[in-house]
Length: 371
Image 1 (cartoon, rainbow, N blue to C red):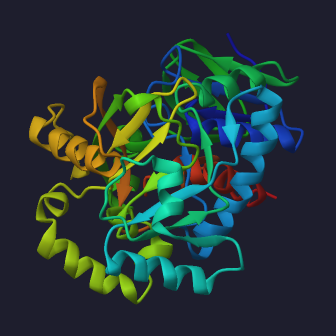
Image 2 (tube, one colour):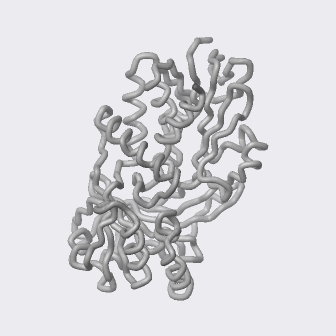
Image 3 (cartoon, rainbow, N blue to C red):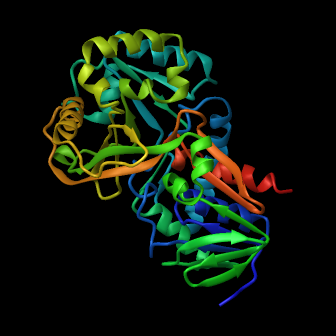
């Protein structure tokens, strides 16, 4: 079966949907091709955190564009999206210094410093007694990652000029013809958004972009004593990962402190953080390991290190409901990749673990580049 459309998007994760939405905004007809019957990859295995405030430079600008689109299209899709902000928790003077430096460099109110008592208002009275302060990150958003991409896809599918081909594999594109396992689609342009599987389709492009896989260990736990925590919660390890924190002068001392006092977190490349889903459960994590082909097995010692650390922050033992391994594209060369894979075929991968944060912004930029 053949059809005519203006754009074919390969992949119905957040990056693919973002590009389909950007095309729809421009009045284009778009067909989305997805090999699975629903999104089951990195777009549903994350914290649901749009980490806007902790970005810098171009990533910050893209995140702010994406923030506005999350609010707009989240409302249109009737999905859970909250301007809940982020809570960065400081448990040492070095961590507090990072937050103070970031706050001083931002517009008033965007990074609001908090006292230990104000942090405990979010985390509860049982929270770690070593907390020395924190910061409220005003512009961060939260969505439910298990709902968000499905809700966006359902809303998009109901729009005129948009078609989904679920359960359909992409076989290649050439001369304006996209070949799939369910027939051909004729379109002048194709955007391929397959994340860490870029090397399966375009190995030379993936190699040139130094794209590999990053594996994360995460879990879903019950909220201790039914606590409700509105913002996404970040810690000192987060301050070493996200650029706006990590680029501060104070981050150098924090990096040395973490290596000396918390080597077990450094060894698993931890980003100790958590978010709360609408049903009250907490998504907690995570660790990082890198490989071209990801070992599917997880280490219980890594999970235990993360769970113990988050339990210490909340002052309670955690009861686990589910565990999983997330996998996303990573590159030490660039935070996202946009490249011509073939005439009329553009490959896009978010390669820094912030797909939920910047994809909607990257998509707007990608579509504008075709003008």
